[in-house]
Amino acid sequence: MTDARFEDGDDRPLHLMAEDADDLKVIAALVQDSIFPITEMSFDRRTRRFALMLNRFRWEDAEAAQRAGRGVERVRSVLVVQDVLKARTQGIDRQDRETILSLLSVDFQAGAEGAGTVLLTLAGDGAIALQVEALDMALTDVSRPYLAPSGHVPRHPD
Image 1 (cartoon, rainbow, N blue to C red):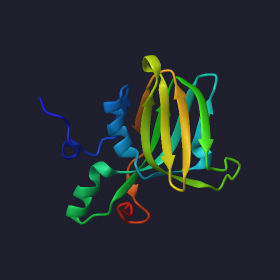
Image 2: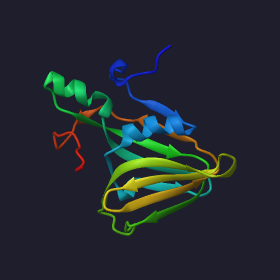
Image 3: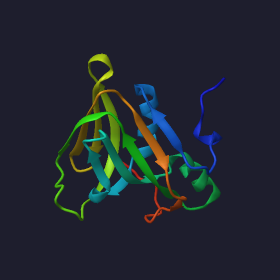
Image 4: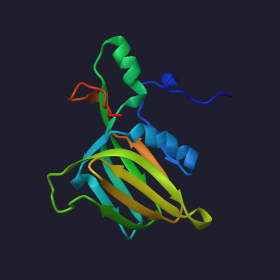
């Protein structure tokens, strides 16, 4: 048995779950450089569920798209974190309904007995910290892929 590779995938929608740090690395890589309006972020205290509707860059297809001479793509995806005890934001104005946020990374800072903090780091020094009882995250594509409006692969200065 070998590990899955991006090259093994096809155009089916992704549906992935993360329950430990290794699982989270896969989801984190796939949601890097996702963008979303601030209005597409919600936390339901009653159900202890945090959700984001993302415009996810399709990293799993980018290299093949460039080799084939076709445009790179994005896809609408939902990132859901369960068992959230508390949600905090830093460096973003939640009242500015026009704000578009860019997700740079997702990390898990482990605490006692499986609890910890999911940290979503945003461009421009923003962050979302989710205190969780246990790591329970899902990423699900909910639309067909579409050509990335910029036409470019996201780049980060060194």
